[in-house]
Image (cartoon, rainbow, N blue to C red; front, side, top):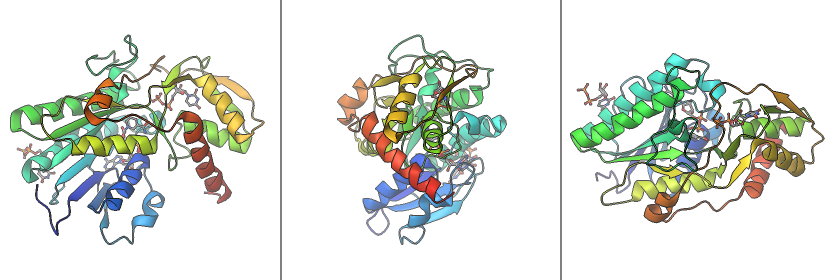
Length: 320
Ligand code: NAD
Ligand code: UDP
Ligand code: UDP
């Protein structure tokens, strides 16, 4: 691997977003040079404000649907809006970001010989009829629904990663990320953890979609980023996609109760219609990650939520 000044040059696309900004922190902390390429669609300078003056950090305002020519050793491709509200705002751009963005980043990896990581998603499993979801499950995805721009875009990106691997020998890592939460989530992105915490802190009603019986398994951001880095460092033949997430599964109604308890909120619960194609159940099978990466989540929901609540409490006090 080429190293300038003895350090790896790492590109993080979507580096100003929730997960990307934590990844930039981690990589800089390990002594790498980090280029963050982000069009700031859902990310913000605020997330990386503390890094802007760092001598080994560079922010490029760039849209990954356009080619990018930089010299790097490693690429983490995270650029893509992740919350349903954001990715459904401009669905065509969401598909372009996933597909054209993947082609450009794979082209970059092909030219430079960089190892490349793809932030894929549990959404590739759709509304699953296999539970918990293992990597060998092919999924149950609606190709023409409102979530399809994201789900199918990410599935096509996976296809591209594996075809560039087979056809050109690219050194790829594909992580299927399950619901992750933590500080620097966007307060208005509509995701369940940020919505519930912000509503609880403001004393507004907590919006439960449907009956709240659908489930998700929530991973704290620090655990997830540790999984990314372990995966990227793995040498030798790399097994196919790897699920990364916390296997502890909760109903949405029980999440609401926990948030109310931890915030000492007086918020009531209100029911709202269930969005279409909303998956009923989601839980990762992480046997492959345990075995190959010696990785498993350490931070449990109560503790992770407490840290996330502190973050949002501070944010709301600052009035941003
Ligand atoms: P986020 O919205 O906070 O971050 C996405 C970042 O990508 C933002 O900074 C945004 O400005 C940037 N971006 C969007 N389109 C771009 C484009 N065309 N060019 C350049 N930058 C662009 O979301 P996140 O939660 O940090 O998600 C990061 C990645 O992880 C995404 O690819 C997402 O699909 C994936 N993922 C996240 C989760 C989760 O629970 N957080 C779960 C599964 C997968
Ligand atoms: N690309 C890029 N940076 C590079 C090399 C390639 O952004 O350093 C883009 C370029 O736009 C190209 C895409 O990656 O269209 C795919 O590259 P590849 O080499 O696979 O295909 P080709 O150049 O033959 O279209
Ligand atoms: N959800 C909810 N209330 C909200 C936001 C989301 O009940 O205010 C539900 C949503 O319908 C889904 C689950 O919480 O069943 C997780 O939603 P999110 O958008 O966070 O992620 P995803 O559906 O992509 O897993």
